[in-house]
Image 1: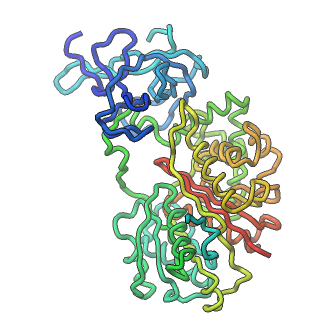
Image 2: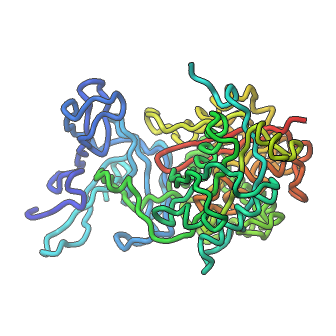
Image 3: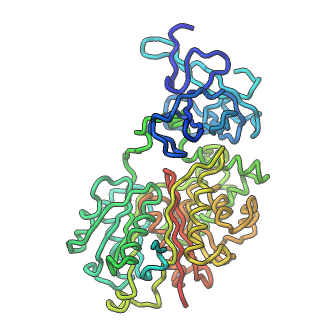
Length: 140
Length: 383
C-alpha cells in the first residue's frame, strides 16, 4: 500500500493493518488519558506540556450511542451517515463516523473496532484513507 | 470573605422588554435592540439617563456592538461592554448587570441581548485539536446521540421525546414575541423532515434575530426613582460554571446543569419543589428531559412520563418553557438568556396573560453553551 495518506494524519497512521490504533495523549503527572492528542497542558491536573506524552489507544471499544445524520452542510460525506459515540477500552470516549450508513443492526453496548476505509484521492492522485468504526467482527 | 449574590445588596428586575424573535430580516440590529430597551425603560418607568452601566450579550453581530446602538438613547457616557458566552451570552450579560448593582458599583444597570444570524468564527476550531468527526457532528447530532442513549436506557420512545415540542409550541403559540407561533400536533412534529437520529426539524430550535432587555436596580434606586416596588422581582441566585472532567461518556450537559443548579439552590435557599416555572435551554427536545431530571424535578428516566401527565404544562406543578422555550420562542443566541428573564419576570408579576402560570412565586432560568458553560438564575416575587 504505497503512498496512502490519512485524512487526519495526526490522529492515525495510513499504513495500519486491520484494526489501527489512535494517536492519543497521556499525562505522566496524573495518568489522565485523552483524545485527540494535544501539547498545551493537562485538562485534568494542569500539568505543563513537558508532562504530556504520546500514547497509542487501541482501536477497540463499546458503542455508547449512535445517530444517523440526515442533514449535513459539507461535501466530505453523503447523507445519511451514522456517528457513533464509543468508549475506548483505553479510556477516552470518542466520536467517530461508522462504516454502516444507517443505524440498522446497531445496538448500544455493541463491541466496535477501528477500520481504514478509502476516502478518495488527494491532489497528486494518491489514495486517501479515513478511520471509521464498525461492529467488531462485522468486517467492512 | 466570599459572598453570594444574596448576601450582597438586593438586586431587583424592574423593567423588561423584547423585540420579537423572527427570521433574518432587513431590520438593523440597532432597531431590534432599541425596541427592547425602550420597552424595558417604559416598563420600569425610567429614563435612559438613570441607567449607569450596560452589558450587551451578542455573538454574531461583530466587534463593538453596544454604543452604536445605545447612543441613540442619548449619549450619557456610561460604561458599556459586549458579553460573549456562546448561547449563554444574554444570561451572562444579565449576571454582570446584577453584579454591578449587588456590589454597589451602580444603582441601575441594563442587560441587552441582540443578534442577527450571519457569518461568524468559532474559537474552539482554532485550538488545532482536530477530532475524527469535525463538522459531521454538529449540535443536533450531539443531542441526537443523547436522545438515543436516553431512549435505550429508559425504554422511552421517540414520540415521548417529541411531546416536548408539542408542549412548547403550544406555549409559543400564545407568545407574541415567539418566532414560532403555531401549535403543532405530535404527528406534525414527528412527520419530519428528519434531521439527526430521532430528532425532526420541529424538535430543533429556530435560530433567527431578535432582542431582549432587562433593567436591574437596587433598593435605593427603587425608592429614589419612584419605581413600582410591587412589580419588582428579586434575583436570589446567580451562578455560572464551566464543564469539568466527567469520566467515560457521562453526559456533560446534564452533569454541568446538575452542579450549577445545585449551587443556585443552595445560594437561594430553595429546592426543586419551590419552583413554579423554569425557562431552560431546550434547543433540542431531549434537553428538556435531561435537564428537569438534572434539576431534581423528577427521578432519572421519569421526565417523559411527567410531561405526558401535564406536570410541566402551564397550570401544572412547574411550568417549563412557558414562553415556548428555545424550541418555539426561538434561539437568536445573544437575546435568549435575557429573554428568559423577561418571561420569568412577567410570570412572577402575574402579567403573563394567557400564558400565566397560576400563583407563580419562584422561577429559574437556565442556559448552557458551547464550551461548555452553564448559567443559572433564580428569581422570586415576594408578596
